[in-house]
Image: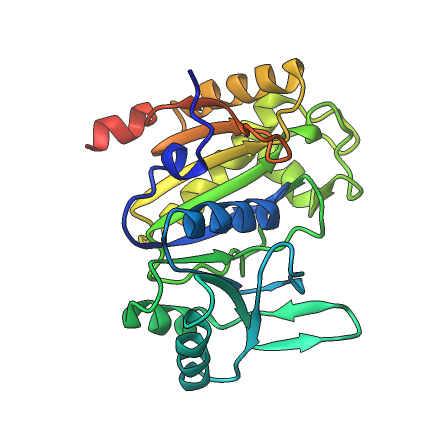
Length: 266
């Protein structure tokens, strides 16, 4: 029987720094995972190296604003006296409602303090689209990252390749060979994911790399997730390929083991 625990499915144990990239559910995954970890007795900070909407009390009991590493450490120590999980950013823009994130080196320095068992970082932006292709300056991953999770929305399957559905659609087209306006298929998604994972892996920081195929809330999407997972088995060095629907109480639908290339490397 498939486990309902994201902690178990992602293989999270004692401590670490999780960077979440991609599109199609990064913020939802970050806060659901934070809640699970906090409920299991872990201390958790949720933050970003880009921008996210200001967390509400339903997702984060507290949000601190800190303009320096010293202030971040001080406010984190104070926050941990009352909460096992809260969020942090460098500033808040009331006009956009966005929480601005930290430079990666600030998060690296915070990780060295061991104040939190887990730091979860949204390290990529996608303009709320189910798919994206990264530009040269993306993603913004802290060096101390132990777990890299690339999220993709399975609701992209069958949609036309355009800017309404894919962030940087032209770049996605160049990467995959799929023509603009054509229906996005599993092969194109797998090709794009492989490029993004190999790009992130070249940075050398993540010990564990995971693909999280979200929005598998219909049988067809679950099948699409499995097909993408099988295509990725020979393309990338992955520890897990997870098909899930984060809106469900039991989110995990399928989980493939380490990819063939990962097994060869080991």
